[in-house]
Image 1 (cartoon, one colour):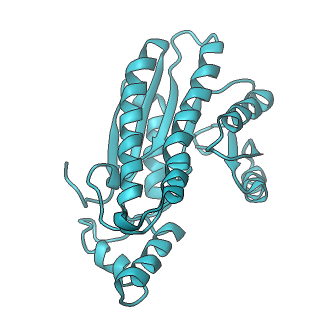
Image 2: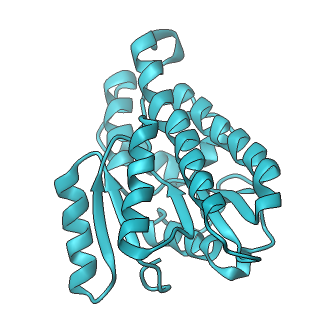
Length: 238
């Protein structure tokens, strides 16, 4: 998005990590600032928006990207674990949409389309075993995305979601490790097993996801709303 010309606010629970990322962007000549906060708290989303407005004068696009995974049988999920994953993945998305919509409605933008972009998953289309709670949260994000799109369209606000597949990041390292602990086997076994489902023959990269988010944030997607498209290299075809 920085390459697309956006000025960026990078928000993270870890303020140092957020600032390091913003510094890296600034060193490359981009406009970027950081903000520390917890996405499960509505007031922190308002803070993120305030940082954007104070530094760059306005808000155009809000990406609800934060999320956590839990790898566990549903029968073993505790109330505390369910509360945590829904607080981050579902409530955090809702609070982000609320904060963004509130700012958008303050701005006199005429026919300019503003964007809310949410992180769902292929697990939000078809649930995965051992990822039952995570899958439920990502189904919920799809529902919130559709409802918000219907409610906010009259204000020239689009709401869409992106649904990654098996992305080669630390989250999938964790999934693989926990599956070994629960089901046995060797490290890397389950990543390899699931990767065989990918039609394109390789694990997804963060850039693959970013390319689609770039599209959603661009004017090319101004007439698209309420959608949750799978960017997974061809794992699921629904």
